[in-house]
Length: 216
Image (cartoon, rainbow, N blue to C red; front, side, top):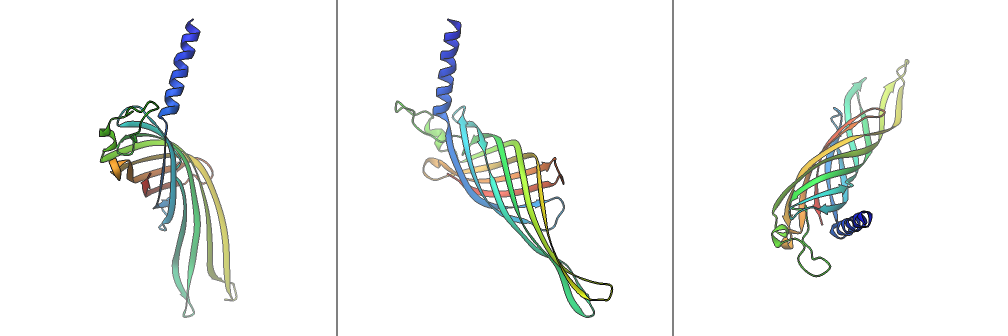
C-alpha cells in the first residue's frame, strides 16, 4: 500500500513538473576577454533554456548561453631601416556553457493557463518589470588565434611569419544579471548577463564578459 501511494505521489510530481516546464529562448551579443589580453572578443549569443517555476515569481532553469565571436587587432608597430612593420593578430572563440540558474521577478515565470483553463500563475507575475538571476555551471571554451608578423634573418632579409594556434579548456562558470520585462504583460525581457569562467584544464584561462539579449 505504501509503495503504491509513493508511486502515485511520484507520478503526480513528475506530471506537475512536466506541465510546469517552460521553454525560453534569447538572442543577442556581447564582449568577452581572456586573461590579461588587451584584445576583446565580440560575440553573438543564443540562449535556449528550460525553466521550472516554483512560485509566482521564482524559478530554476537550465540555460545554454552559446557564444561565438571574433577577435581582431594590430600590435607592436615598429620600424626597420626606415620602413614600418607591425604584428597582426586575429582569431575566433566559442564558449559552450551549461548553467543552473535561480531566477526571480521579470523573466523568471511566464504566465500561462493550465490544462483545465484556470490561471496557473496570477497576472501580477506576468507584469513584473524587473528581475534578476544568478547561478553556476560547467563550460568549455575553444579559441583559434592567427598571427602574422615580419621578422629579419641574420643577413637582414625580411621574413613574413604566419602561425595558427588552437586552444581548448573546460572549467567552472559563474553568471549573474538583471532582466527588464517588456511586451504584452511583460512576458518577454531584456537581459544583461555578467559571466566569469575559470578554466581547469590545459592553459587554464580566465574568461570574463558581458552580454545583452532579448529573451522570448
